[in-house]
Length: 83
Image 1 (cartoon, helix red, strand yellow):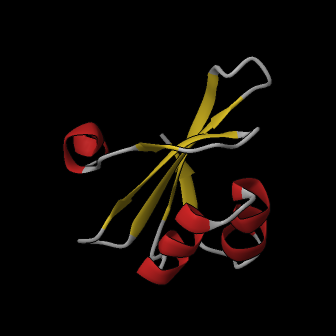
Image 2 (image 1 turned 90 degrees about the vertical axis):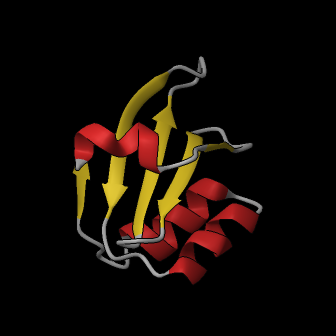
Image 3 (image 1 turned 60 degrees about the vertical axis):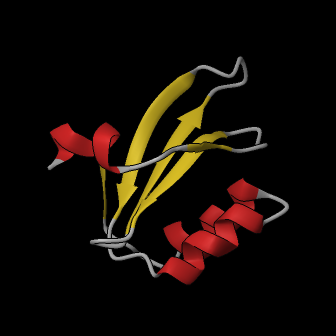
């Protein structure tokens, strides 16, 4: 399934100092986050599993993507993996 990620998910660039882009796969509630460094280069990509759609929608509209991600995804304890 991970090999097909780019074909299954549309990524949305976001205005953020540490998040490059985000995507969401409705079929299994997976949140995809591409992180970046200060120069804007992608440094790593993470899939968070079983994330409710309202959390993804909140991330899309959050003023601070990094703070929202930290408080509502990372600290919420969603399982994740790097891809």
